[in-house]
Length: 112
Length: 114
Image 1 (cartoon, one colour):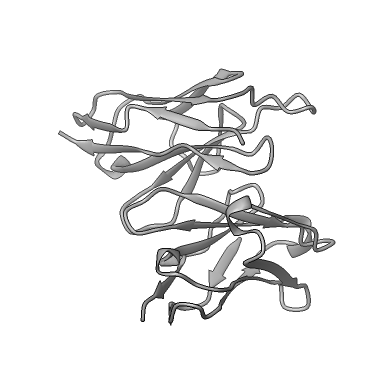
Image 2: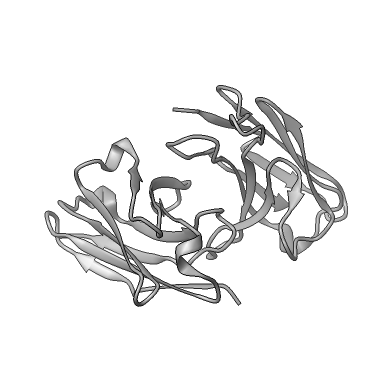
């Protein structure tokens, strides 16, 4: 199974300041079709997860452009350019390159 | 608009079974798989399995092999997840998500308690 790790696990941020979350996979997420199936999900308190980014860097419909994803192979990053109050929650990276699908442990983002 | 609407919360005794439904609307049901994911209280996300809604093929996580069955009813655009031999540590919110994980159900709380 592909193990996903995230750092940090907790990130207190100041409103309007940037935030960055790293995600690492135990093996390459490059699929045989050439795509890399690494997604980022946001889970606000009491809500189901919400897709933010798919295939490393593609923002899903309706996701603000302050969210961006980057990376390749086994190392990936989610960046929030200027944190807003509505961004509080837990962020998960997820790989869908191969079964079993696996998630990172989550990074809790809250306001200082 | 795409929606996945799940059945209501359940309270079950240890050893019982639970069947959660996930009714899809707003898209062609058989064009997208369904994933099932659960989240124990205060914990992270755990993938349970996947079902191809076109042909019924499934792929289950090792942790649930032998205890879970995922099915679909294409006449009602509904996916089902049945978990058997429930234990207290199966207490969790169970989510369905479209195969691309782009749309999620609202979650179903399953509580296992004697």
